[in-house]
Image 1 (cartoon, rainbow, N blue to C red):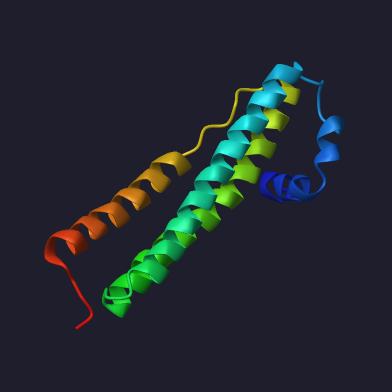
Image 2 (image 1 turned 180 degrees about the horizontal axis):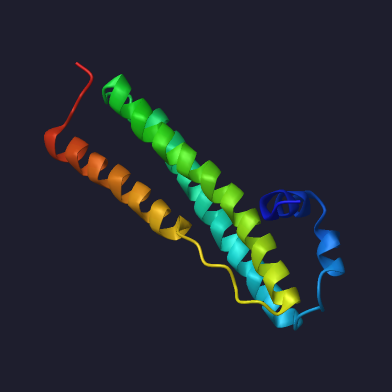
Length: 131
């Protein structure tokens, strides 16, 4: 079974993690959970930002408003999915005594947020109203 499929199965059956390796120091598992919760908070903030752009900027051109809102909403969805995936991968690595997994996702997320922020700067500076 591929690593991705195994990780995906662990999303819905985290008790199976106990079958892998040894139980790590609980402080590491709790730190991993706090990191997961931080990613979830980030996802919620991105989703809230997407709804805010859509609901509170009605004078913005429809395409610009919807594009910015969808970019933030998509980033929030990806962030939430990545949170659980990263939690499982880290927990499994700690139990197996392996190095923690690395990820490009923080860089991708940062670039996506920066692009949306730059687009919002352009909107604020040039006032693209839907007239």
